[in-house]
Amino acid sequence: MERKGARMIHLTWRERETLKKVKCVHTDAKKYIVHNALTAGKVYDVKNETEEFYYIIDNTGKVGGFYKEYFQNID
Image 1 (cartoon, helix red, strand yellow):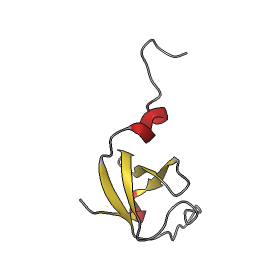
Image 2 (cartoon, helix red, strand yellow):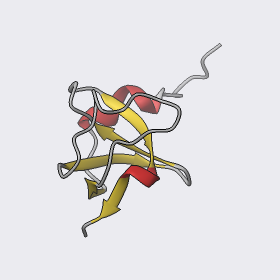
Image 3 (cartoon, helix red, strand yellow):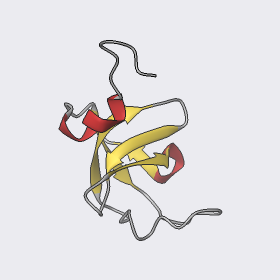
Image 4 (spheres, helix red, strand yellow):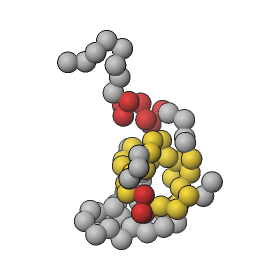
């Protein structure tokens, strides 16, 4: 049940202001396939961040969460 005024923030991440930019440094995933959604050397806009993940607009045009280990801060 949704509380009055509560929003599902992930639905608006695409339109949110970019927090910072990060550069993908590799797509060598141990567990997951990321080379379809990320390109090594490409710079991505971070829309949200947690301790473990960056949420970016990936190569598919959608917001996806990826481990920070794939990226390098460029700001």
